[in-house]
Structure formats: structure tokens, C-alpha cells
Length: 439
Ligand SMILES: Cc1cc2nc3c(=O)[nH]c(=O)nc-3n(C[C@H](O)[C@H](O)[C@H](O)COP(=O)(O)O)c2cc1C
Ligand code: SF4
Image 1 (tube, rainbow, N blue to C red):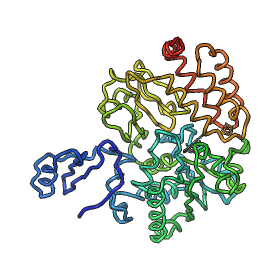
Image 2: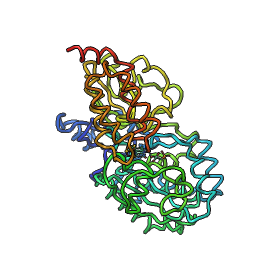
Image 3: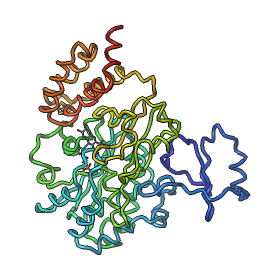
Image 4: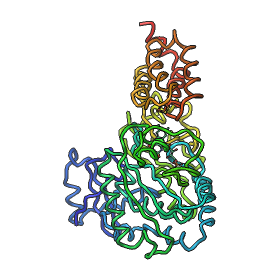
């Protein structure tokens, strides 16, 4: 039987096909370019290659290996964590989340157990908003989860709902991510029909799930913008406090969690829970795609680059976190990865001849374009930063002063972090800017 599946994270291998027989899983990559003889042999059952596992574990274990039915998801282990969670008291589930050390994968790494506790301490009804906006350039991890294993997200939603006493959840998906939207719509319908949402299948109080499409733009991933967008207000950030866990969507206590965060929540009962982070990797690498990387105190960027077929000696730097991020030099490649330092996880590999001043200006210009204009430091500061970068060495002091104001006074972290890649580039590559200015 042939089944069309979502991308399994090996974006570099597309178009690919995987032949699956009991005890045998063999992936054939880049079908457009490679001869098909070996694939035909494998289909005929005459392939004598040793068993080749998908290599995926944790969050990506089912991504790219599901046929889209609930039955297949269940057969591959979906909803087992939920079945276990609903036999425990809500506070016990929150304790398990805390023990697993789960932190928000949307980028800020806020402690998830604390967020759920803060909402649960307020009187109901409580709400959950799933942040599946993912507008940041170079980040495509949530989209893989939504398209490739939507039942894992729904399981995470139901688990959070049980733990924090949530009655209603809204999944807010990037408006351009049409495949993700249709995969999630179908999975929600399947879960509802199977009695998973109202608690009749596995137990639990039951939760209604609604799916919404995002309004468009990087700032629409900021959590309070999502609340305004769902309420039909202008998509701009709210002042905080009040925090969403006290007064969020429609003034109700609201948990806002990233898609990956809720997917990781389904692994908290694993022994031990995998301390992994999804890393969307692109740029100058032979095997660009989505990697699930252990953040275990051992794994370093050098290991990630090796997995992607990159020679670290041919890499000038990594851009980590895109327009809100920083550059990572080869000197740091052997240091163990630190979860909080990974942000949302987007990494662009820059080759030896990368034009750092041009890249820096492009990042600054992106922030200026995406600024929603609601607050002065960002509305005025982001285009000013672009202008000052025309001659960065001469404007160095003014750039530093402007970044300080934007960092301290912006209403949200789009403006608050807009200076970060600029400051990082100027600190790490001063000669590049000097050279350009002297031309
Ligand atoms: C400009 C901007 C864009 C953001 N985009 C996203 C996004 O696309 N997805 C996301 O989960 N968080 C995004 N965030 C972070 C969210 O505001 C919020 O911290 C996150 O959804 C909380 O979920 P977590 O605790 O599970 O990480 C963004 C923040 C800012 C300032
Ligand atoms: S920092 Fe920028 S994006 Fe955020 S509210 Fe202010 S103008 Fe809008």
C-alpha cells in the first residue's frame, strides 16, 4: 500500500520514499536525481540491506510515518501519555511536567509547570491558546509537528487541560500554513468523533478545541497579539501586567503555550523524558531539515553540524534565532548546548564567504518591516537602526545607545530584541564592517 505522508524532517531528501516491511525500513532520498533500481528491488522484497531505522525518536518518532488516520496514530502510541495522565490528580501531572524540566519552546523558555499552576490558581473557566503561528524566518519545527503528527499536539492540549483545569482551547495556526491547518482540522474532528475531547473515551473533564488561522506577520506570534487577534481586535501587543494566566483571552485566565511545548508534554512520563529540542537547520549545509537534538550536557553544535553533513571548518558562523537572535562563532561549536540559549531553535549556517554586514542589515530591515508601530521605541527605532547600519563604524555609539533604548522601552520583544543580532554582529565581526566602510 502506498501512503503519502508529511515531511519527516529530512527536508534535504525530498522527494523521498520509505519502504516499510516487518523489521525493515529503508528510505530512498532525492528520487528525482537517484536511479530507481534499488527502490524497485526493495519494493519487490529482494532488497537485502540491513534494517535501517528511521533514526527518529521522541517528538519526530511518528512524523512522516503516519497515514493520517486516528487508528494509525493510536497504533503508533498516540494518547498513551494522556491515558496515564487522566488517572492522576492534576497537581501530580504538573509535578511530572516540573520534574521533566519542561520549558517553553516558543523561545522564552518560561517554566511550563509554573505557567500551568498560575492559571490553575485562578477561578475557572480557564482557557488554553496554542501558539502555532511560527512566523519567524528560518523556523519550521511547529509546522512539521502540525502536519506530521497533529494527534501529538491534541494529546498535549488534553494533558494540559487536565492539569490546569482548562475547558476550552484555541489552536492559532499561521494563516499561510494551509497543510498544517487541514491536518489539524482533520485530527480534531477524528478526536472529537472518537470521544477523546469530551472525556468519554479515556476520562478527564473534557475540553472543546477550536482552530483559528493567524492574521499574518511576525508579531502575530507574540502571545498577547494572538489574544487580540482571536478577540477581533487590532493585532498589536497588550501591556503586561495583567499576565494572561490572570486575565487573558476574553478576560479569562489563559495558558498560552507553543506547539512544541505541548508536544513535549506528551513525553513527560517516558523514562527518562527525552531532553530534546527541535532545531530547524538551513543555509550552507548539505542536509538542511529538522533535527531533534538531545540537550543532554554533551551534544554540541559540532555534532549537529556533523549530522547535517557540514564541515565546521567551512562554516563562518551560525545565526541562531534569526531577527531576534545572535551569531555563534566556531569557537563555541564544541560547547554543550544550553536549552535556554536555543530560543525557538532556528539556525542558519553561514558559509566562509558570508557577507555579515549585508545579513545584519537584512535582519534589521526585517524587524523594521514587521514592527506593528504600536510603540515609539520600535516604530521609530527599527528604521533608524537600518539607516545607522549604512556606516556602522562611524555610527557605533549611536547604534549602541539606540539599541539600549529599544531593549529597555519597547512594548514587546520584537523591538526589545531587534538590536540583538546587530550588537552580536558588531561585537564578533568588527573587521567586516570596517572593511565595508573603507571601500
Ligand atoms: C515578535 C514575537 C514573535 C513570536 N513568535 C512566536 C511564535 O511564532 N510561536 C511561539 O510559540 N512563540 C512566539 N513568541 C513567543 C510568545 O510570545 C510566547 O512566549 C510563547 O508562545 C509562550 O509559549 P511557551 O511558554 O510554550 O514557549 C513570539 C514572541 C515575539 C516577541
Ligand atoms: S515593540 Fe514593535 S512590534 Fe512590539 S509593540 Fe512595539 S512597535 Fe509593535
